[in-house]
Image 1 (cartoon, rainbow, N blue to C red):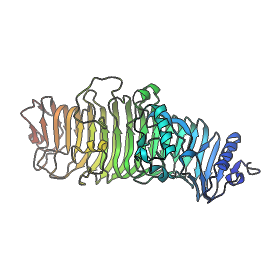
Image 2: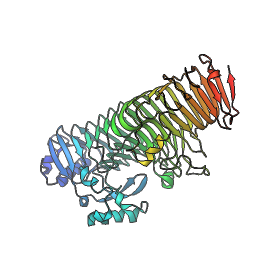
Image 3: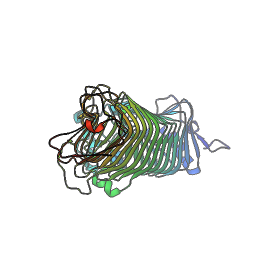
Image 4: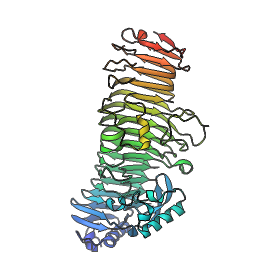
Length: 518
């Protein structure tokens, strides 16, 4: 029933009525189905249209005019059970509000709004099982029994995502606003050639699991000129969890994020913790992150396995961030745990670069922790400025985030094979400890480090660090520039520094470190 002489399928022609509380599901889905059969555009005019979950087919443009809203019903019975991936596992759950599944050549366009009516679903999150409606409790029990992967029904992680692109190709989203998602806002899974441009992604701060955009085992994904204000991670890149994720073996790769603005949330760009199928070839440029708990965060743990590699973060400005840089191999596990045997479940992070980045009003300069049995490799910083003078306040963070605070304001590094800093400026409180602290690390290069405020504590602290190279640095007015300790601290090479830097290096009695000057 396309408009005569056009390929436009106006939902009003199928019986949709704006600003009515009666669902228009049948009318809108009929327009989508006919459009998929013929190719064209489904047109949603100004007004609010209430609907149950919808599915978009091949060769379809879904266009929401300015002032148009698709608002999904608050009724779990209206959401069928479907197979998908939730938090890293293939399993069943509620049908996404808007689903693009197993199709190609789809566009979502316009200046309208897609509203998931999340408040209806959030009320059930973490509610005691006895407080859930009988029908909902039965659905969740079914999910638990059939999935056999999670024990806690009341945590209710199977709420539907607002918008899911699954096993699809050549999908683009532009102009629209996606808000109030029951679970993750936008989920791209097992898909390729996906573009999100000039999109607004909005969830309130208290939306549980309210991630902005999750890219999951997908490739050739581009996110640009997009605003994200989410209650959880803003942009998150994943590839499956543990043994199943490794068996599926679908990496997240060839991903670019550019010209994006992130306001609030747990992290600006987050990798993991579900990364068992590998994450590689990711570029993030020309972005701003404000009032997020983390800026760039890579999180993993033992049993994940998988490799995160070849990531580039460039030309980023962060402000009022708890910790701007995090690479953490101890997600939800103690930092002081003993080494374990290396096996297929041992993760790896390598070849990550940070360039041309400014981070102001942050609490902790950086946190980098590989695993003692497998050091992470190849972390580099160039032209980075960090002002870590904001007072520490970890009281509102969940336990997984609190680990990143254990070392205070300065940058902390442990179990990294090689890490380098070129033309980096770090400012921490004058009374604080070292600006940079390294433990059990093989190779450290510091070239042109600037720490503007003098302190009694050393600028750089080394404990059991193999080789350290210091170039283009100057001693501070008081206190040593570098202090070395630990039996495994080996060579400290000084070259091309300013002033008598060698005299500002202290070696503790428990170390046999040698100092080389050139």
